[in-house]
Image (cartoon, rainbow, N blue to C red; front, top):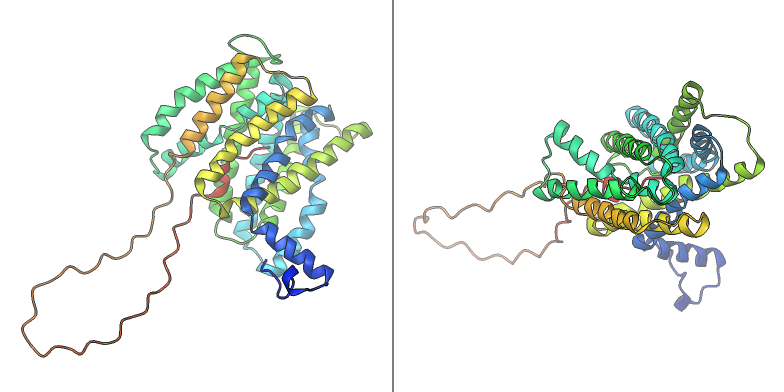
Length: 365
């Protein structure tokens, strides 16, 4: 949104609407602040899931269902501004949402097995799976640093899960690892499908609304088939799920997906560290789930390894400029052409787009 004319303090405007528009425009020009706020919203997800204290499929279904009344009107307003999305893009977002529903159900299982903070760390390994899938399916070979980061991440997973010392709040450490890896794998599939079908569009709320609807359907089906689903719950649980849908599924995702494309890849990768660290801190303060020293060491290893691996994923190929013509043989002597006026310097070419922001951020909630 561009800043409206004659709405600054210096202009002496007293229009309150213009002042609000000016402040909103100023906020939207701070993508790093918006990304941090979005990551802060998402980092509380695991704590809210624990406080809801209801079935894993129920949590996944209601956090998506309760977010749709806010996302659908935003998607309709977005369509009026940017036009209608293609059917392929909408179907792709819904298909990606089906995997997102699997991700949420598995992640809720991991929260129950290893605790809120540790499950968030284990759920942020999708960068590794995305790079491996891009290598196997798209031929995008990662750099050496990616392979070097794998042993560090795997050792960190063993430590942070509590499998090494049996400490912390990990009731079923091995099951938590399996559910955490399944969470990251399904989330990687969600990102890859969304990247292939929704990239290059100005729409933000539309793809998120479609994916959220697909996730709600997927969670409902998983709950009906495997259990862990109920339409009824205590009012306290409903309140926590409503807060989860508002902060994480709606506000957090909208802030992150709208701000990360305007950030350098290095800055967006640092968000990989913010969300798990904040989740560990919140779990310790709110739920009393204090991690052991080995778990903290493992969390540092996982986050550091993922951060290093995210910096080794190659960007999309750059479109090379044509090389300047090499000097050929000297032209035969002749009359010199009159020197014309020097051409004005044009604007600098914009830098190539960074890799998909969602892949760089790895925000999973």
